[in-house]
Length: 146
View (tube, helix red, strand yellow):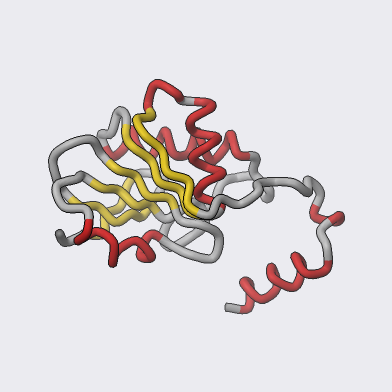
């Protein structure tokens, strides 16, 4: 199964693979991208798949808020699915993508089939960036440098 890169309104870049059966949407974690799922696609034959670059990654536009809440990501995903012509789907979220899946399930339950949370992040345990521990600040600086 070969994936192709597509551009959805927003803009949102994504990897897409055609197939039959319920769509499977793959959401990456922080510091990653949709391309991280490319090697897995051949092992999932027969499924329509969509792996979007999360807001602010790849060619996807960032969300307007500097520190968006999970609900904003859930609504972003709903718009991306609408643009891709996907009404409901099975969802796989890795790391921070797992937080997005949980938020999407909460806000849009009728659009969700099955879910897989792979090594989900703990979410937004610290609200204010000023309260972040020094290690978190170092990781953020490392990611910005990369």
